[in-house]
Image (cartoon, rainbow, N blue to C red; front, top):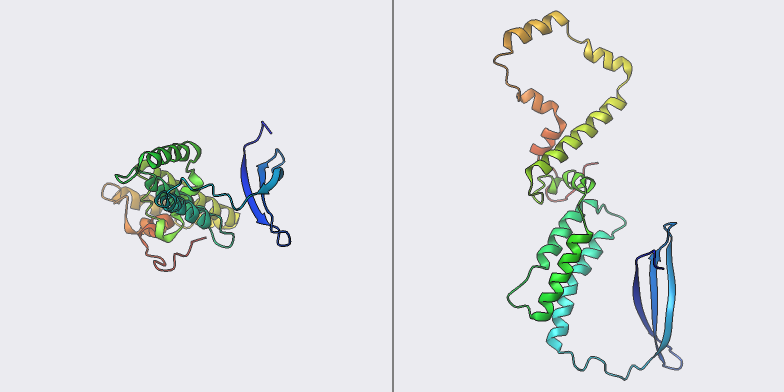
Length: 230
């Protein structure tokens, strides 16, 4: 067990026949074969008549429920199995960071709790290039507003261009590649380059149109449905 990190859950239930309540401690972890392992640590009777929350104020309990609600929403959004969720990773990371920012209404307990949760969140979670690519391919997130660094946006755009060119290269046949290269006479192409090379605009509209990534950035796609481009 010392080799793995796990989580402990508490399960409570009541025997319908004898009306006896039980409390069970279960540990969950993933072993070296990437198998989910569950082990029951203990099971004991639970005295449901014993009031263990008498010293906890109702306001504190309600505040704790509200504090945990945001994490429940993030878990529900990211664990969906029938819809894409990869593009939401950075979105919810940003939302949770903002949720954990200190507030003037927080007492000492919640201030300490928020600071600890924020530290764990920053240490344990990292946004990779794959998450950024998923954001870019989602029409409502393609502006990459969550990426504060300009070079990060350029990295994503260049990576998408590389992937597009790689796909086009794989799909084109050798005959098509030869035809594309030899489509214009060398002499004519050379004369045009010599005559206009000093006045040509390197970012002409034709080139921008031929660049799928640039056209996608400028396009307005499915603003209401949020469909994903795949």
